Image 1 (cartoon, rainbow over the protein chains, first blue to last red):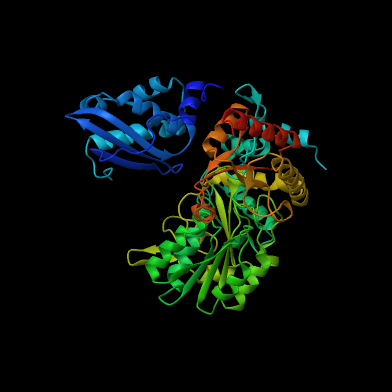
Image 2: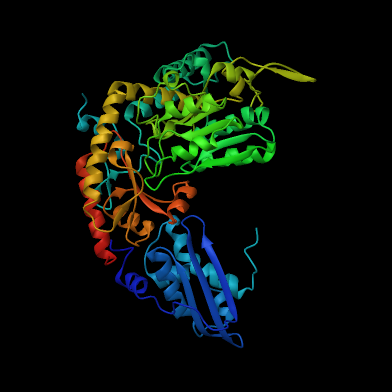
Length: 126
Length: 407
């Protein structure tokens, strides 16, 4: 099993990094996964186009929460363009587990939220 | 009395391992598995009998039509319908309910009328009524549920009035497991002049159903939850009501005459079966009905009651488990629950690694989950092929889940 719930995933789930809110974030975005009701908010503080602080909040399964927690660590220090270039494979490498198509949505929710925020979307286009 | 080993041997899909463990399939409320008798009936049909039905005069078409209509007859008997003409084949229970909403609802509802449903309905018995109320100006009302997960009968008395034209309710909740007193609810609906629509998707596979004894006006069912294939369901409707209703879908097979100026409709049940139907699937459903008859529906109900009571007792040994809905004496063969604050997807994923298939999510019944203030549950559901040993594995896996998530 052990595959899906490796120690690094469980660690981030139990002790999430950068969980909470920032004061006056420059970018703030919130979205839900209608399939399971998971929800994530991402907040970024910028210096120019570089991310200097990140926070996330939300509720969901271990995969979505661990993914969000790890992602906040990864993107701190990145430029907005670097975040825009992140993709599914980046998240899978980061998690280090194999994920089926259904749970993939859980894993990718935090990236979807942060990219929407970075692209400045008001909401996801229909 | 069939032995559980014999029954399990009829289901090829159960003879496999998942992640190194024998498959324990506890997700039949979502969709049941199929016995070899059903699979072979469909296979044989395609190998020897297939042609379009109700059309050709050649031998294959005659044989295909006979097999198709024979399945209708067997389903009619299974439900104790007065006539096979009262059985309409659809794609699933959802389409059956939509048929009533669109055909009966659009004809008979108008502003000032009320449609009554309950808070424990599956989305398929909510959304069609929302749509038809929007179209007709009728008002949709909900019977609330009690903290025990049963219908609030006092509220029902107030909500069921002469304004109520239609009362639609589930015979068995797919989340709470609650078995509703269908005959009494139908009688109450009739007392105010409303018609009664029963969602039998969860009940028909598990409890003997007699539509005449229930006096239901309509009853919807799905084949794939009762050992049959996907892609086919049925609507039972009282003949007088069906005769008076306009067609739902237009096309081939449902017409008597088509002129450039207009068309007239075929007799029941064909008026409601536009286009080439799912012939092989209907034949598969017929084989599923035979299989259930051979097992005997009273045996099915007794077997499930035994497993469910056992599962109820065992799951309550696990600290932190909260099961939604009433006790095992008043529920069908399913348990939807939360395990502390562990997300149902995580519970289901750990169980899957142990070879145990359960459902996680809102089970297409968000209003119930809203009622309890939770977004999702994990659900284990039981059918003819499940055993107490599988329940033991399921409960052991819940302990393992708690261990992993340190709850």
